[in-house]
Image (cartoon, rainbow, N blue to C red; front, side, top):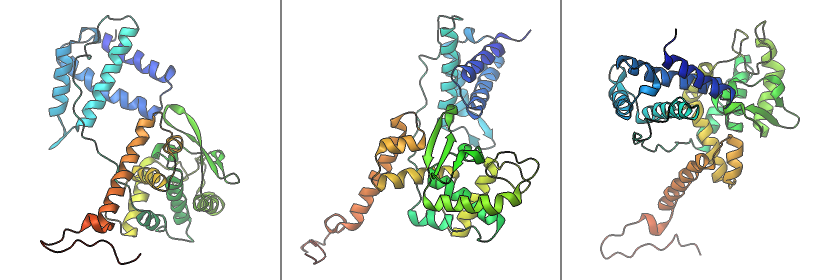
Length: 322
């Protein structure tokens, strides 16, 4: 007979999949995080989640904060906080289901997570990356289409690799995207992305297609659906060719997409819809990024902001142009 804790976690994951409609990737993240919790409780000889105490949950958080997942590498505060959130959700579920009247996680403090603002690339750096794949080449045309689509539509990496051919409408210039929680949204495609996709679909995809292809939009050189790791390698190689020395990930392009839209005057609610954010609060972090850039530009360019005159010298008042 399975231990109660294993059955409780399985019921909770079924609830997330069926009732909440969470994606396979999100469910796998919950499964991993709750696996850590199950292992910790087992070492404490606790095999039923309803027997866990607040002190035990607090000890788990402390243990995870000190634990090394590789030699010399500890879990970040954000990872510990995410795991605690999964444990909280499990216990909240069990209380709602009537398994227990208590939730031992309620008094456990969340680790303080430093706020890391996204670091977008400049428009010039993005342009250099997008133009780096070789032209007139099957793989180069594919890579160009991938990069233009990822930046042009602000897609998550999972959304990009999950695209099928029938979700592309080149005539209208749009994509039907399956986002988090299997929620669909339609996002527009600009001219460069449309042209790159048209070239890829006409010349490259037929050359790459094989027996395993089916409806996948972006293919690897064996004809199968391109993976997240494959796209990350393509982007890293493009960044190296473009001479961009910053760390560039698929999410960097998404950050840059949002930041450049806001800097161009787009309404934050429109950007929220384009990104597929459930909450406006998530999108508003980008307004702080553009605000920081605005301050940087101001202190760089304004004569009364950047100069500190020597004692007795008059401060400059302008550049002499009326």
